[in-house]
Every structure is written in C-alpha cells, then in structure tokens.
Image (cartoon, rainbow, N blue to C red; front, side, top):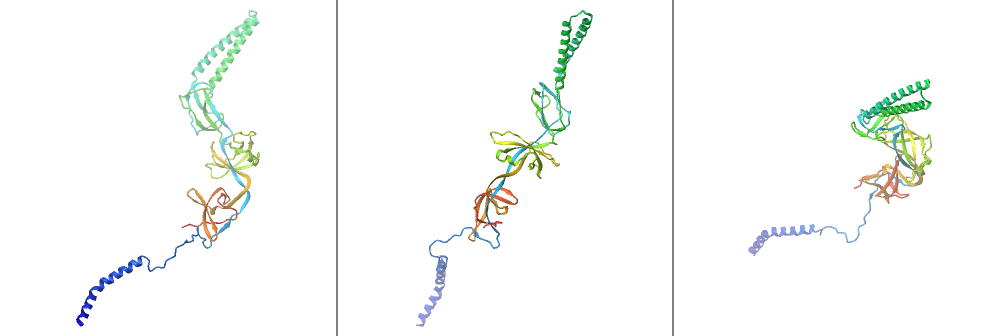
Length: 352
C-alpha cells in the first residue's frame, strides 16, 4: 500500500507544473476577454455638445439695438494745381534734364525741342519784314513828294503789317521749342526721352504743387447730406499713420448716372506729411439707421478665414460661426450667426 502511495506522490510531483501553467493560460485568456470586468448593457449613451462652462468665465447677453453703422467713402488724393505740359510743335526732343520726382521752379526749362526748321522760317520772315519795311519807307517818301498814289501807300503799309505779323508768329513758334514749368512743384512723370519725336498735344510732363493737396470723393447721393461746404472732416490716407484734417471746399452739382454719386472736393492740411497724388483716402460717415448686434471685439476669434464666438447654453459652451462687419470703439458688429438674447463668452477659452 505504501508503494502505491509513493507512486501517486511521484506522479503528482511530475505533473503539477504543466497543469499549473495551463490553468494560468486559461485565466489570462479569460481576463483579456473581459470576463472579470463589469459590462454595460446595450443601448444609447447621451452625448453633450461643446464643453462645460468654466468657473469664473465672463458672459454677456447679446441685445439688438437700433443704430447707424459707420460707412466708409473712398477717394483719391490730387493737387489743386496740376498741369500737363505738352508739345505745341512737331519736333524731336533735344534735351530733357528733369525726371519724375524732381522739384522744379516757376520758369525752369524742363525740355528743349529741335528748333532748326523754325529758325529757318523765322530768318525768312525777318528778311521779308526788312524788305517790306524798306518798301514802305520808299513808298512813303514818294507819296510825300506826290510821286506815289495813296493806293500804293496803302499796299506798302499792308505788306509791312503782314510781314510783321508773320515775324511775330515765328517768334512765338520759336518760344514753343523751350518747355518751361508754369509753377513751383514736383514732376510726377516723364513720358518721353531725349531724341523721341513728339507731335502737338502729346504730354511730356505732369507737374503738381504739393502744398495744395485735396482728396476727391465720389459720395453716394443717399449720403450726400452728411457733407457741407466748409465742414471739417477727418481723412485716413495710405502711408500716413495719423488721420489728416480736411475741409470740404466744393460739392460738384452733377450726379454720375452710373454710380449715382456726386464728387466732393476736400482740401487737406499737410501737417508735415507728404501727400502723394493718387493716394487712397477714406472718410467715415454715419450710414442709415438699422437693427444691429454689437459685441465686444474680444468675444470674436478667428480660425483660418472663419470667425467664431462661444455661445453659452444650459451650462455648456458651444462654438458658433459668425460674420462681422465693422469695428468701432472696441466693439464689433455681427451681421449673422447670433440672435437677440443669446449669451456668449466675453473672452473665448481654448477648446480641447
């Protein structure tokens, strides 16, 4: 009997390790399958939109107000004294000592044209005048002696006057070969170079006086009542950080049939800032009264090209896309995305 017992004990000592290993594998497989974890029964799990309202977050209720939104009207700067200098005779350009941006003075020569043909004509006219003058003096002496008729005297005098007019005409034509600045100013552009051929009427230079600048604004007829002669306005110009003071000098009494606008001319104060012709200028006026939503500008943030606010509803914060219009005094106008009475965060919080 003891021999059987010993044999059984020996078998158990040999087999218990494989059995224990197998049992361990079974337990591990059951654990990985979730057998020992509590399970949720089938069904829908409720999803809450957005995220919970953070403690201490500042909110504001959006209210619809009746107000006049500011409207920008735009115009272009120019000079009150602006001249285009063109050729009056057909000729080649001999000299052109100035270029765009140069400051010039009244009477300064800006270009000279080839005047050889005119000088030849002038020399011929001068010779004709001297001959006519000699003929008139001879006829006058004969007339005084009774050797010439009154008709001969009149013919000689007519010939003299005609030759004098021709000579004067050549002198004027000769002056056209020298193009001078009619004012103190700045050259804006040079359209030709030395050696180029120009025809009468072709513009060689443009010169403007930088001391008397203005802005010309096409104002829609519906906004024209916002302007009056001698009214002070503030103009924002490209390239100048601070607004420039201006005064309305003229309202053109003609309506553009295409744009339905009238031109308003506003004289600008220099205030030490150089104003260039062609500069873009903006003037802000009150527009028509309408219902509008205004919120603090800090409540609106951008993601790429889109604008958003964070709306508070039932203790949750939900992002919503909006469209904005104008910014004024730290507030921004909303034109879509929100309604009257909705609550938003004054300072949006980072999501995620």
